[in-house]
Length: 217
Ligand SMILES: [Zn+2]
Ligand SMILES: [Zn+2]
Image (tube, rainbow, N blue to C red; front, side, top):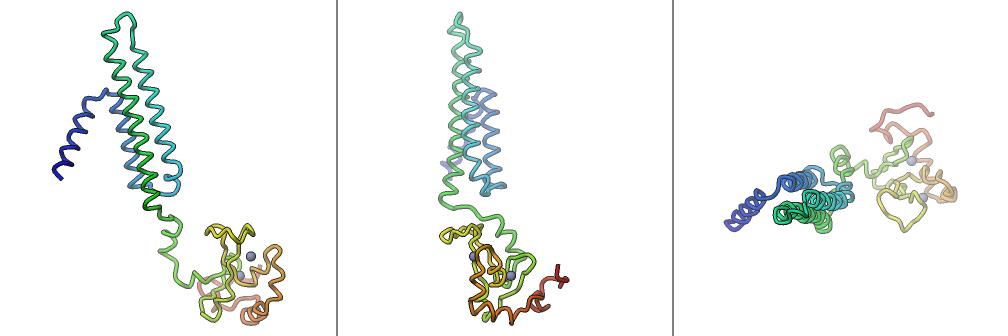
């Protein structure tokens, strides 16, 4: 712990000796990094963040070099050297911070992954019953009763059955599934007839108990 304090102190002392433009660049990158890690850590940040940090680092690198060269006067080389070095300091330190920030996001994502924001918000209001609900909006039939669960199918939206990404899976009751493009063969499945007798086209209030019953449209 003591060592950490000493390290933090020396980093701070080093920061104070930096040229103002470097301090500004470094603070901006660090503030963005803290926001990214603490408040905005999601899939978008993980995908876009690293390239933004790297690009910002490179931008400040060139800015630092440009600044150093701009002030450089070949007639007074001795007097110009410090400004050139200041510029180069900005350049390299900004690069280190930018690339380091990008690396920290990448590492965190690789080791810990990222919580899916969608499921996190849905989890608050969803119940176990919702896991067994037909996702076709006009249907929404509840198949949570164990004996009915077999009527709920996992439909592959892009028709590629090897693509099991959550975005490609739509949970459909057997009737809505049979209505999908090139799925009419499902109507020959014995389950289809059983389902249709058990759940006539106008779903009973019990089947739709979580939604107000509306007239057929
Ligand atoms: Zn399907
Ligand atoms: Zn359905």
